[in-house]
Image (cartoon, rainbow, N blue to C red; front, side):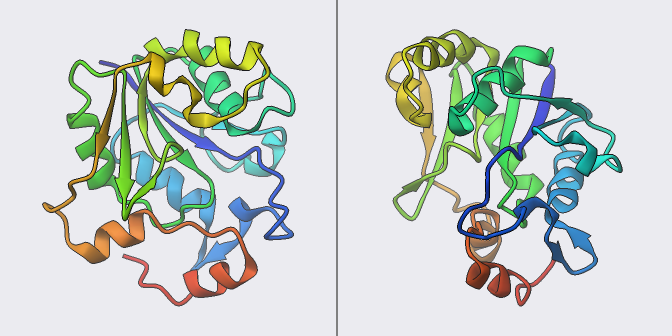
Length: 195
């Protein structure tokens, strides 16, 4: 199956007060860190953004939401609509420490499901998940009704929820699911181990 890695970078970063994807951790921007980690599991990379000029240094395909003001679900729709792939590895631009072995683990667990969504410490991560192209129609139906909830199409599809990450060190899993939405979380991210 052809895969495509996707970074959702269309949010307004209200709580952070600045574009989260361009913040630096170490000597790399957050989006660069995510991009090069995705490159370890796929050679197709797409960034969903309204400002592609901000990421000219990244060899990605840039796409824009077709459903305006509809949140990250519209970003997922755009990625699936514009890119030719069977499987999409969705990542948010506020998860600077994603780990490619965990992404590959989710891909390996996709099997006949329409998607694999991780659940870590009781928290579901639909923007750090893997979906097949088959979910596109249900995502569009939801957006056509004006419903923006990212998990809204799950009941109509065969989604596998992964709770077990016992094969990975706890520190690796915690770093993978760390996200930063506030200046305080960004300051904490700068103190975290880079690799």
